[in-house]
Image 1 (cartoon, helix red, strand yellow):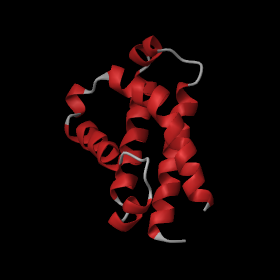
Image 2: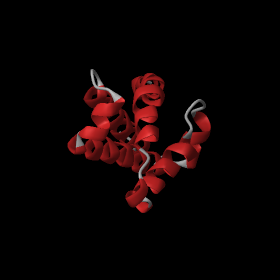
Image 3: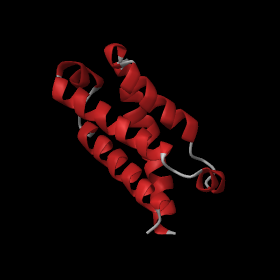
Image 4: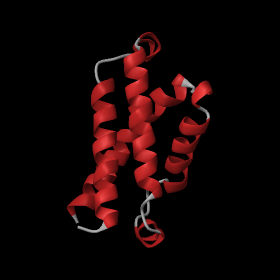
Length: 110
């Protein structure tokens, strides 16, 4: 298995876990549950770190994934840890990750 394949699997695993943790919850629950907030934030950091490790060649071959934005989110979470916007976290987990998961599943299956 190539390094890119390993990283794609890490991305997929982190995204799936984040969506699973948010299922059946509300945005208000994110505000009230520090453990949920910390878990989702960490999973997005992992997702971004794995994305940063994907080779430029593989990124060029895979359209439909916002590589720069995923990595940038990781950087903002790591370096701006004191000012995390929970609305953005919730948006990413509930709206952006499901289509990303579908895309990653296709890539991993190839």
